[in-house]
Length: 326
Image (cartoon, rainbow, N blue to C red; front, side, top):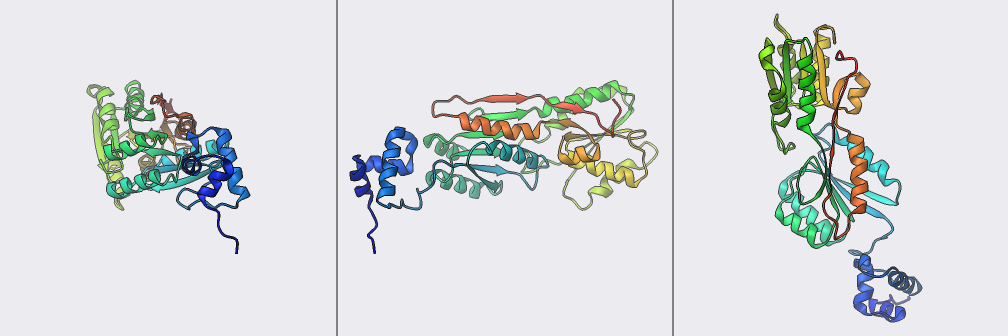
């Protein structure tokens, strides 16, 4: 049986120090490209196998994405943008679900110290000082989505501006009875109430007969009955602004079940512009979900240890389809 080559033998073969040979397998970015090539050629010649914890093909771009995939309606579209952008390079995309804060911290720190990934993209995730220290110490490129944390590069599409666009539309309209349908603040929302407050502040409430607000749990089995109840009665709303496309779809289905003509007797506008909104012909506030994912990859690929954080703000758009009048 052939005896396994040692790191010392690799260093001697390549005519470098043991420390340099070790760095080639753990952090090759710190070495000159020609040095890396020389050490890797030595490893091939001697059939050297690096320890598993640091062994990986550095030609593959490995990116960890922490997402609210099962609690946020737009993250699927963002992931599609990330996936499509990554096709330009050999890549490995690793998905994690935002969950318990303690397990999140442990997971991120473990990925950093074992050099398992080259970069992070976080969807709507709060980063504490402990994790930030690790990211800075090891110079791991990081991009935030839906979190205006000035310590990191980030891409935002203003919730405030998007809600104001909907309010401005209703201000110009003849609708007098308007219902806001929103999600109750929860752990997956780090900016609770922004859309409701912005919509409320911008709307000319004095010129409307009735402006009501319905806060619900989007995952509740009673969601349909709650919205249906709000749509029944003589003074039912003439228009709905929902702070997510999921809730707008729920309102759409409740109205159809009650045989309320859309948009003749009920106008519905959602928020996000998800695939479902497009398929149903749902009017909505477009937040550029796919483009956000693609741009996140471009930014994270460009970050260097001396780079300053990038802050990009995308402007939302109000998209009219079959559920509202222009």
